[in-house]
Image (tube, rainbow, N blue to C red; front, side, top):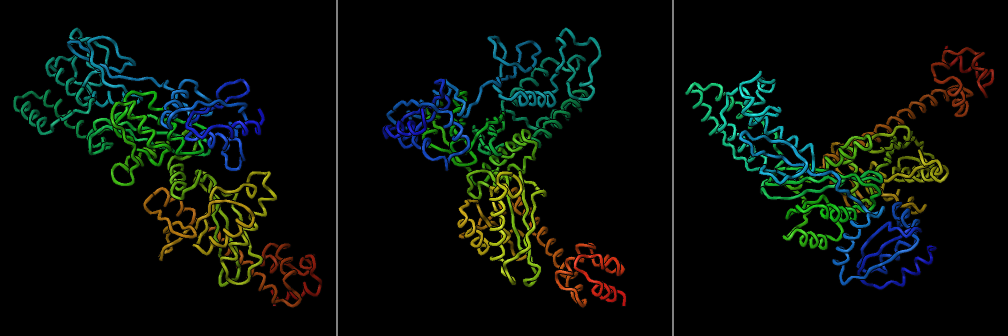
Length: 606
């Protein structure tokens, strides 16, 4: 079906809530969405592509027809959309596969119980702790309790193996209580297992004072082996408590979800907190994300449709589409009130930031970049209200001395790092005297003219930035914004302002300043860009002044004007080489006569 026919069909839809299903030429469902008003939402796809993301454009190009299902409310549409996505798995929806599997810690019911990692719950008398989504998490938890409580990890059978054979290395380095040596009783061992299970469940109330008293009592009774084991446990518990900083004070259950994007990919990170401790974590890499708030909504629906353990509180790192409807859906699925919150400060905000940092690291592993740079770019984009992460940033600065040697520098940062091959220098041509605003306007006009000539190359001047940062305030912004509008370009534009000590203070628009000191990642990135563009511009300015000084010294010679001074410098490369040249060599310079050559030689050798 042609695009005009699809639009005509869409315009005939009712203004009612419902679900729409986009199909390709083979009648396969390639996208499912819900709408509060079907006509308005579906017709948007088949209008102008100007405001469409690459993902939507690609999807529309593959649409041959669409179906729709009317519902009585927008919430019913949300529920139906979630169910249909799970059933059909359309290629243009965010899809999460529940293929990671679950892991459990199994505590056997033997006379001498053992703790092991298993993938499923069996119908036996054993005790199971979990489930854990991450295999790494469950293995780490088991290693912790083995270190603290001295639980063996060998395959020996007890009590059959007690007293037979030599103890393993773990016993000698105090990682095992040494059941095989017979130096620990069955009662003490089972007590260790009980404490270990409490620890794994987050119910561990190990009293160090009580353990210290037990150690002293054992020592007084000359039970030195037992006293040594208790001493090792005290040390291990203290160390574990120092390491276990990932807690939140109210001790409840919650999930924290954050997303970091880079170009067409995104990483959703999930932290699961149970009994106030970080009990598990997982992440998902998805592609073709353009609308972050919509993507968060789709992720929540997909993620919790695959899980039965839904906490009462879900903290996100930013706004989400259809928040009220998603909360209602989660509440009905969980059978209890579920709240979605967006922390702005305090302990919860710090946990969200930690979650974002981890998402950035996982995304960096996919792209080969540094996680903190990806997080900084995402935070900068969110802080400035940009529609997408500013992967490609251009920054400009003007440098002159009382209007002389007037130049500008342009630096480029790609993925948070300097891209020096794209740096450019501008010698100001149309501005006389010191006028930074007019100079900045000239530079931007020349830069855009270069883009129009080289845009087919998609590199250097042939690539437009995602963000422009000017070293300056509102005056520079107004001057450049006027040029952008006259040439018909819409590029996010901000200024970088400094404090009285010439340190980066904030980012500014034409109307207001945006403080960046509260976000270390953003502050470091912007400060680095501002320092780099200033260094580059002032370096070119000093080079220009030096050249002008050379010109002025040469033009003092009888018969040498600006053109001949430039010709001499171009031919010899430096004033020093001109000074060392003889008359014959000077005569060989284009436009230099024999008389002028003699004048130059006498000037330097009189």
